[in-house]
Image 1 (cartoon, one colour):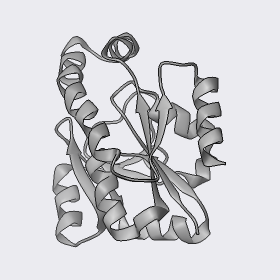
Image 2 (cartoon, one colour; image 1 turned 120 degrees about the vertical axis):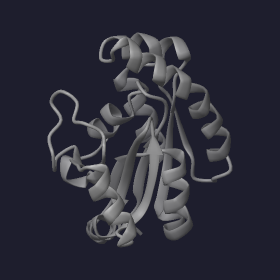
Image 3 (cartoon, helix red, strand yellow; image 1 turned 180 degrees about the horizontal axis):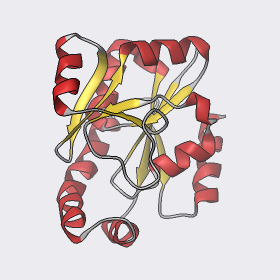
Image 4 (cartoon, helix red, strand yellow; image 1 turned 30 degrees about the vertical axis):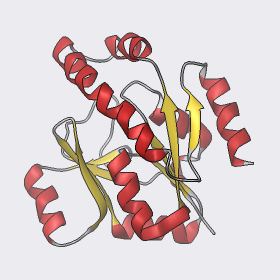
Length: 180
């Protein structure tokens, strides 16, 4: 059975970096989002960047396997994208807890949650390098919600927890050990 590894954690936890290090680029599920691209992000490689109107049309046409709102932006995985990826092999994507739970309801244990845990202080340090002051404040407000998400995820027997306070190599080692 092929699996989709879903990386979850607070902003700045390293979920995207770890996922990209652990898997091949062609294994990434390309999600849809209504947020603007960050520096070095590319449409069709990192996300499909769409307007809120386009996103809502896709929702109305039942095109998403899951979708959620995070930090006032919509994110979603198209049904066709996920089905095609799972038919080929294992896949991955950074996602929200709600997104994971919605996918788990449909696909069961094919969906594997990977939680990356970091402290509030570590999040601040990492986000100061990439976020504006207003952006940082918004993400700090979301941090507590993210921590509460972990409690929801602990109900799933296939949850993998990663210590995000360590180096990327250590995080990768933790993940590889858990996948054995």
